[in-house]
Amino acid sequence: MDPFAHTLVGAGLAATGLRKQTRYATAALIIGANLPDIDVLATFWGEDSMLYHRRGWTHGILALVVLPMVLAGLIALWQRLFAKPRPDTPAFRFSVLLALCYLAVATHPLLDWLNTYGVRLLMPFDDTWFYGDTLFIIDPWLWLLPLAAVMFGWHASNRVRTGATVFALAASIMVLSTHLTPLLVKLLWSVLVAGLLVAVWRGTARDRGPLLAQACLALMVAYIGSTWTLARQAETHAANAAAATPLQVQANPLPGTPLAHRLVLVFDDHYLLQTPDGNEYRVERPPANAVVKAALASPEVRGFVTWMRFPYWDVEETASGWLVHLYDLRYQGPDDPTAGIGYAQVALETDDVRDAAASQGQQRPAQEKKKNNTLP
Image 1 (tube, one colour):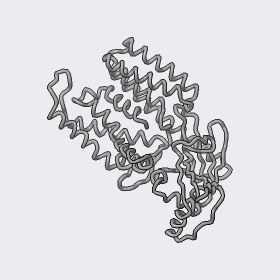
Image 2 (tube, helix red, strand yellow):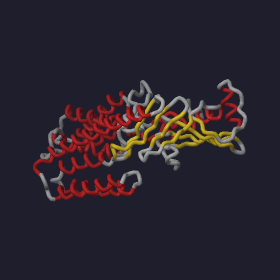
Image 3 (tube, helix red, strand yellow):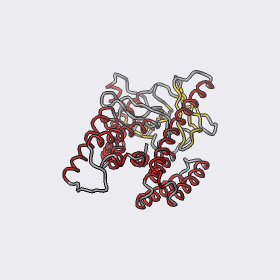
Image 4 (cartoon, helix red, strand yellow):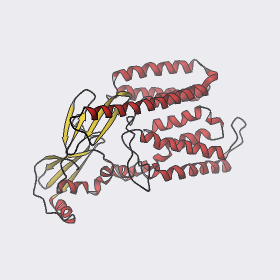
């Protein structure tokens, strides 16, 4: 999920009453909920490097063991060196802090698994990608429900209420301005956010803040469970309705719309893409030729090739060689030709393909006109 969702889930957990269990509980929960994303530092080495390292080591099973201990140790060191006595805060209890760090860090790969981007849960022992195919990468209800938990759980603090209100308004701009969010979701979001702000600033249920925060997170879990069920039902229905039995069916949920899915059906020689508006597209997937194999072996798309799940491509002849356009059908398809997260390209000279073919024991290919190819 996105950093906003991870931060709000950590803060929402603190609002349920966990922040009172030990000093620095809130910091541990918020930092821990975001800590696996330290792999974003790979962005400094380029976008493809980021894809190659993203959701790998820091999201895998070893990180789930090590990162909470590191975080708890650093907080304990801070407590020892810099903390001053404060009678209005809970006592520092390292064992409780460590448990909260484990809880917070565990929420991160779990939420990441829920979307279609994927996460390598077994790293560094196995780099297999796992997909929950339950939520869009950004889901408005995974912002609103933990945000409500924060605002109810901390509504006695004007500073927290003000900060949460600013976030709610900023999130509203993003939700309402994007074409990805359906009109009905925008309307429902506007009504719920307005109601939440009125309730919190009027002091509604002031004495039941932690209980309401727990209810909000329970609703979030129920929402996730229902969207998972609906996605699996959509996949089953698509498989049963297909003329031939697909090798795989994958549901791409739309943001905030559990009943709408963009479905990918995988067959031996083609994909079928079914959009929520009822359109269907066929994308061929014949074996990769030498030009495409050379492109896939190119170091400049190492991360993209490692990450892509339903690949297809176009090969375009140029004056000096070929330009290979690589796509991932999860995010880039004939229904949306605008280049985005699911697109990369490789420019190949004739010698590049010759050398790649020679290293693979193949003959140098002849120049080819534009084609549409995919991995076998």
